[in-house]
Image 1 (spheres, rainbow, N blue to C red):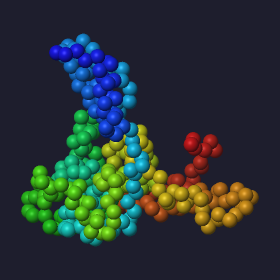
Image 2: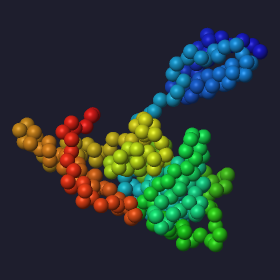
Image 3: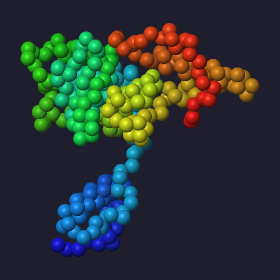
Length: 294
């Protein structure tokens, strides 16, 4: 075997950087680092030439974030070719599922109609303890499209999605066509941004540990790759109607902003049958004076 030194590894990275993007270079060097680490553990080599190389993990590119609004969502759903494509889109936009693995793995036995819950099997996280599946609410926005497909399902049908399971079913390309048919421009990271949009919405109304349990990621991953700053956040922050106030008026309006944000979140919170609990006890609770950390 020809010896490869750390200097050779540096030369390899520099040659990649001359013709490829930064994240592509990072990914390729990361794979090389893993490859040589495996060879080292097998005692096939005496050292890993990439062992000391930094920056072998791709960075999050938040410039490609895109929040899919409800109006855009409705336009896309209106031109989907059939009920199963409407459900595929709704599972991403309203359910936050990973496409295509979690969509195609969904079985009718995973749908708990009575309790309004959906068991989602996740091949991507099944190697983690407890990551083989998760339970999410059967959100009202999603349930109508699932029910539509259920009405069309044949007797004894196992899988929910049956028409787009073939190897030649390129869902990404088909979705691009559907979006253009709706009169919209396809957004970056088509399915990822649908999932990220849903997680951003849910984070407005539920504690993060609940949201990540439903979406199937961690708080750290959500903050780095999913949660987005939307135009609604800016509108609430600047309070356009009160923009002409003088500083004294703005000071008095601070407490009003908190109630405005609370009302906004309450308004956006979907009503989930079977999940509501009595709020009588909350009216007698007091908020600690310490406040929240930024």
